Length: 253
Length: 315
Image 1 (tube, rainbow over the protein chains, first blue to last red):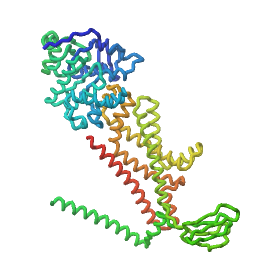
Image 2: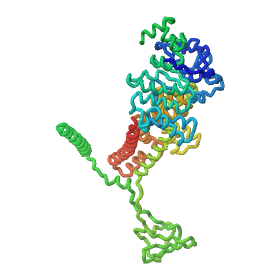
Image 3: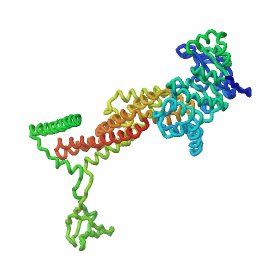
Image 4: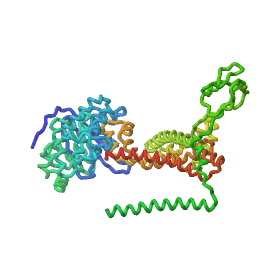
């Protein structure tokens, strides 16, 4: 079960005392502090409304924070001179609802950002897109429009699209929650292969099997606070140490 | 089979009803002793009146075997050679005085109504372009977080939608036109574009806002800037979704262009009025004018349907 990697010891994502209060007064994140290291796979679990998706979305500034500090790859995310678009190129994100661009074919979905953001040559981008789509098992679907694909296929395209920008880290926001049960496996397989290659990954999910098997660390959040941050063995093996985690796991397993 | 014959029945009823309607119009006009004279309209569609050829100054005429007339001017101007005369009104060797009618030549020109149709088409196409540009800019300002852009666009939309187009045309022509020295045509284009732009803005805004927020998030998460995400991800989808209401608004633009006739632009409507006063064929002319408008609007609506069908292949 344990396939722990050796860390080089350098931090990829550092979050210090991150607070998020919505204008309506809802306190979504409370002093969240944690470090995620290069090559680490961190799975965030917790009940709905616990702030785990909100936390994930602050890591590429889809949500702003009220106070605290987030440092990604050595760059302060909320520094005055930070180019957020430059930073985001390095942070791939996969959404629960896929969010593929419906007016573009599968291949064009993958090619859009490399073409329009980095301005690389079209021939090169086409080759890379084809390689990525082959890798996620969609070589035959390249010229099809997303609406003709199953959920699992769409999510694999979304992963390929994020990878096309050659990011150093990937954020997954409940990537399998919108899928039919029989399609969850194909998406998790792609994610596992990414983890095996040493991609830094932060994954919000309810797939406890995935967490147990692939994660280097599991974070349990509740009510906007980071309650438990531990290796999977301790999370799933010694639940008795954490009564609220035990209650959560017994509810969903 | 049964269903087919059933449908046929209704088709026949439709044709019968239309026939009845036409007969009704005809008999109604009979009851007021109206005499239909459709041939009076024809010259205003295709103008076949011959052109008079008039001597520019005193000259002497010579006619050769091919029927060509050569005018040799007394004052030494280069000779005029008339080769296309359909009717020759001088004899060989005649002395011609300035202003004399020398000959007539056949000509086929577009009639007044077709000229008006062309003007309507021209003013509509130019206004259509500008109204989409104005509408797009206003829509983007309307959805921005910046209070300046937002309030400016709301003010513009509310003012334009809250006042009649006819009044706007007068204001643009008499007020702005006087200040900025605009000619009639420019004033007409400005009034129509600004008016239609406000409606296009609202259509586009609703289209942009109907695209799920996840599309913008996905685009931004890939490192695209807001303008790029708008241009490559949101707007293509919004344009497609707004095509049906947009078609309606652009058809309205063509019809609204008839109001520019009040500032003496000879569009189809003004041409219609002029033709009525020249021919007295009131009913025929207005039916013709209506048919010509219908030709423009149905062409546009057909074109937009074609675009819609082509884009629909993605879903």
